[in-house]
Each structure stands twice: as C-alpha cells, then as structure tokens.
Length: 55
Image (cartoon, one colour):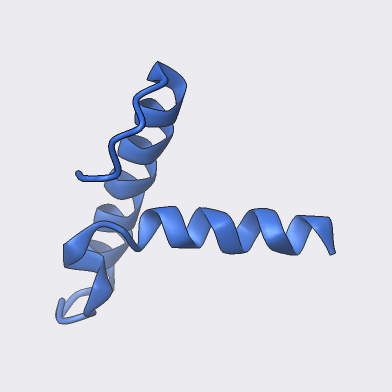
C-alpha cells in the first residue's frame, strides 16, 4: 500500500507539467522523453529544496 502512494504521488508531480496533461504527441518516443524531462525537473527541484510547483 505504501509503494502505491509513492507511485501515485510521483505521477501527480509529473502531471503538473502542462504539456503532459494531454497526450497529443504522434510518436511515443516524444511522450517518453517529455515524461523523463518532467521527472528530472521535478526531482531536481525537490532536491534543491524549492517549493515552487511550476516548470
């Protein structure tokens, strides 16, 4: 149960990136890359201790 909350919270952080809210990319590789960039930005922001939620 605890792992599920971690995964859901991670997805919530990633979905704060506006471009990922709607999946309108034609290639799945583009979507995968955008998700990776959003995840990296989220983790860097959290590691730096910033509380801003905008990308």
